[in-house]
Length: 106
Image (cartoon, rainbow, N blue to C red; front, side, top):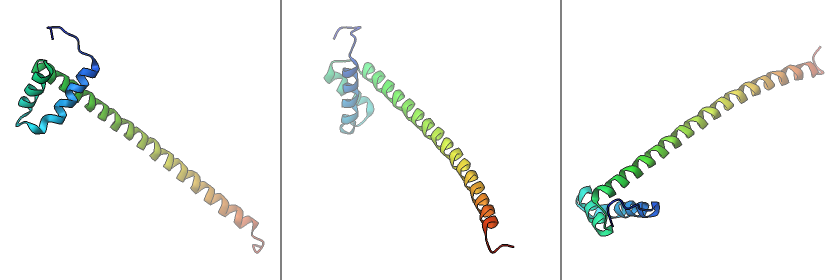
C-alpha cells in the first residue's frame, strides 16, 4: 500500500489479533511483528504502533473497570452500614414496644 494510506479500524484490529495469535510461533516479539507485518503488506513499526495503542486502550478499560468496581463496593458498604443502623433501631424499638405490651408486666 502507498505511503500515507489510511487503514480501517477493522483491518487494524484484525492485524493486531493476528499478531497476538501468532506470537507463540516466533522466538521474539520483534520477529513476530516483522513476519505478520510482511504478510499483511505493512511496515513493522505501523503494526507495533497499532499493538501499543490497543494495549493502552485495554489498560485504560481495565483501569476504568477497576475504578467502577471500587466505587460500587464503596456504595454497597455504605448501604450495608445504613441498613445495619436501621436494623439496630428497629430491633431496639420492637423490644421496647414488646415490653410495654407484655400483659405479665405490672
